[in-house]
Image 1 (cartoon, rainbow, N blue to C red):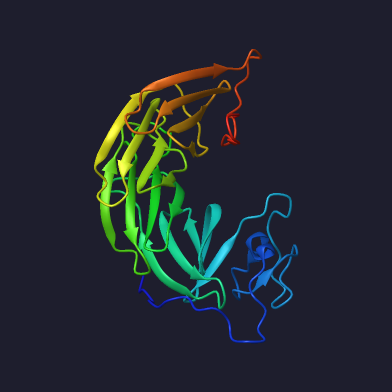
Image 2 (image 1 turned 135 degrees about the vertical axis):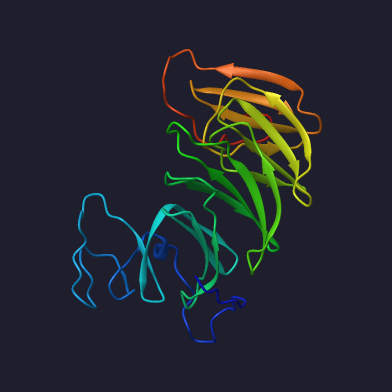
Length: 253
């Protein structure tokens, strides 16, 4: 797939800024128009399954099925496809500014992705399928806006949580129960700790503490600089649910 590069610019005076509602819209696979309806007002395309809609991005005459959440970073949407592709889409004109194939060698199952970032880079967790034969998943840093790979950090799990970027360090958990802290500039590992649990949700950082959610539900707090375990809280009610990203306010979680 050819790539189109460029930087996202705010709209001209008098042009309305993009709305958050845009994230809920569906890209028509036939004409590329955005629609909130079960069918496209532009060409009459009917969504195959209105109750569980698929989302599509129309690129160069082809339709790409989107996978996972849409992430907003500055003037771009970051979207990923079910075929292992990463797209940087301008929020204002909805043009693709860069595209990257993320499929790993030998990967036959559809991957999913988790994304974090700042003005200079994207940090993407590549989540392998849980199917037999899938390999371990890395976290990869890409430069913006051209999506050139900067570094790659392999983990020991099939999946990784959404990463959290704080003070130049990237925090995430792998599905084998390890918590990770890596240097956002180089991808070098600061520390890993076995927390015996995992959640796809992002950890939370406050002061000198990073808090990781895990299935159970369970929450584990580690010291930010060296990963030393501070405490673990486990719900009295047994559950298979994954907790959401913790919210920290003053001295409460």
